[in-house]
Image (cartoon, one colour):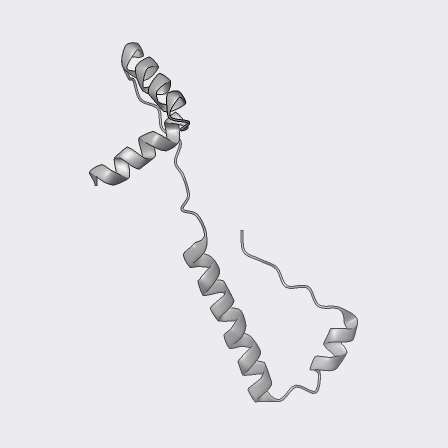
Length: 83
């Protein structure tokens, strides 16, 4: 979701006298903020469905629980390592 900027009436009164340079500076700062947000925003996830042998999943979940890990997160870690 993109951030929305709200301005108070007082702020709008103050900005009416802004110079073109001040306006450009504001717009550049806003652009940089958006760019930085896009770089740090988490990637979208896609829900998938796959069949896994029950004993494999049970053992994998048990090992993750023993190590204090969430099993779905560990699956993603293993996928990233493999790539």
